[in-house]
Length: 172
Image (cartoon, rainbow, N blue to C red; front, side):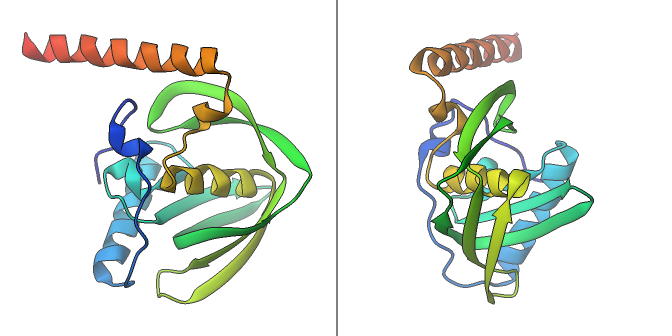
């Protein structure tokens, strides 16, 4: 298990570094992330969300009876459809906030698997949305960045207020 980091932690706004070598350390990080994600009831997690600024994400979701569970190292969207779809998104690093986000309906992603082999995945629906959401994390982009400035700032203010309140409680 790894500790999740939460907004407004500035690390969430940093661009993650490419993984140079797929080794046991990276595989251990991926396994830890899968366990952390499951314990938090998530379907996707980027390494930056556990404080590791490397281009690694994990997914574990069920869509239309098909399970998608995989490790994506250095993922890159190489194609996105012109047609868009809207899903309600949430984020483990922005707990208890959800919003409808419009994204390309289909994407094609190149990545390395946990053994370092080059793979390509064509995805649509929830899988495509989840991949785009997590790849955004690797670029320092959060789902709230797709919202109006007013909504985004409201969420950030509430999270900062909650953080200050928790810090005051810890001091007493």
